[in-house]
Image (cartoon, rainbow, N blue to C red; front, side):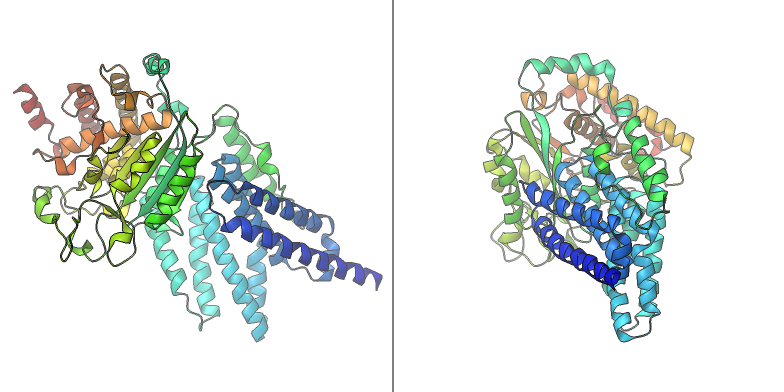
Length: 593
């Protein structure tokens, strides 16, 4: 009887601690992932640390008192969510590893799966209801695990988890035929589109900045000359994407997913080995213990001292205009004097009412741009092409983001990347000078090709230029691996050459000069030069509608017409046997004239 009393008391203590931890978790979860709030996250971590230790030290008593496996899984899942939130807040890779380790441990031990299955076969209505609740927990958990696995580029894990999510949805629909699973059907459709776009070219390397591939020692001396003047470093970024029917999974759009990785360091060898051991050969594969001995502080043991910190990033999912401006104001207020803020906006230029008549043109129809993009909206006194559209439906001012809305933030150093049919609206130089990369008004594609399923083409070029080149040229995903590897070598050589030309150019505007030493921003600028030149040679006629632009202007030495810019693209196209899809000969003739 004494033993029963101790067991009941232990479980009562566990439930009380769980309720307290859940309240702290709710406060931490509801706070935005920018502008402070770390203390709430730390308090939640502390509460779950205490809870986790209790279930480790008194597991036998807790089980005797009524503790169920899914409750352990719920605690571990909350810890994983806190680690992931910390990653989004701080951009620390070790926090992403921490989330992966806890999620993998939950999955490998079947904390939710076994409980859900037992409830299904239990028979009573109470068991069925509890089983449905646990199944929902498991579905949400696998969706979260998938996002973390995708960010860590764990291809095998992503393939396995996506298959498991599909089968689990089908199993649950069969077990609970009266329940509507329309929402999860939509999640599966989104996942399929996302994985198809993200995995289009299997042999591709990481989108993160890799010193082995993205750093060019031959140019370091010429870049060092800019350090004699004011130099700005990228420490903060705001990333948002809001498009109709865009490729996304949960609240992560494909465009922001790519840009997020593009602004991070690729972990070095020692870090990767430590992370791999934890997530493949270490704690998670040791299932001998009843709890799966997961160390809540494991991520503190993994650090990569050889690399600087990643820039912090605020990912703002489908914001209203007022919300986006509030985020910018909050971040700018804390921006240090030597910092620059990158703002990435990927959005439509048209409301849902006009979207049917505002479509991207292919290479065969781009010349009709003036008819594709009417200047005036019906029944409106304002132009339809002078803003970005941040809204789900309808039309009207509250959902329109105008260039003038950003003028107050030009008091701070800004690097703006605008990816929209209406990007040209931001050409108007108002406020203080800022660095601007603007997408084409019309995306390019082979005749009859559909490119929208791959995300934004401009963002694709800035984050994965080799894949974007293949997509533009109509090269399918079954390209020979050796040919693809050779093409990447040619591309890296071209980017190194472009970087060298830019860094030694005379008359480079100081807006670019003061950010060129930053590796992330420099890589974006160099890839912009590549993107602009590739699209330039993709089209035979002069038409600014299909070309990206930048402000201030870059030197003529890196313009598409320059021989040094064209030659590597020709070599790349010939290597991939697609030179006939470009117009190099036409451009060479124009140069000779």
